Image 1 (cartoon, rainbow over the protein chains, first blue to last red):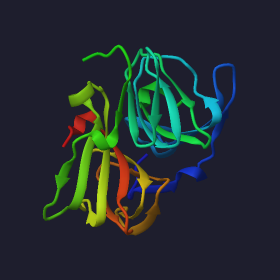
Image 2: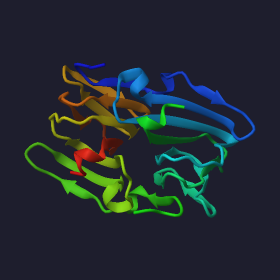
Image 3: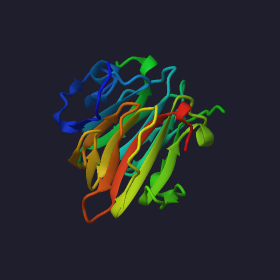
Length: 122
Length: 122
């Protein structure tokens, strides 16, 4: 896929995948920029919204995350302990490190999370 | 470089490179997560702050950008025209497309911009 101009979009207009299961509570995932939608070759930018009381799974995988907290308050498990983290912070999760983000506030937690395309977009 | 836990930091505590030249006005660049600081293998997350009246260069290069507008108002050149873009929007600039971000408001414009490591960190 090739474009002749840049693509501009509003994150909240991207249809979310709503995730609720044994490991995950009240998480919305939006793939903003990836291979599947715009042919981006190397990495995938996703926006996650975690409702108050919600959390992402506590898990690890072989690929890395580069995360920026856009809004709200989080508790971030870094492989050893939970840390209070606020909007304007970044988190680098190397491959193989167990991690989790919980909403620790009473408004939505929003964060950008970038992964390699090779991780696929799931 | 390998870590045993995730790295957590505050973006504004990262020392900025302040850029003012013929092409660029009142831009602060912070490398949040990259190969040089944390050994991130594939892509580099930067935070740019553009002061009111400031702008990034109008230019193109062979690598792509994945951008998320965190704060403020921008005018984004997409290769064809300027577009009004607000916080909560994303911009995908494929390699080879001319682009520019201008601060179009009266507060700081902040955006996350991710590039491949192969682009190096300049």
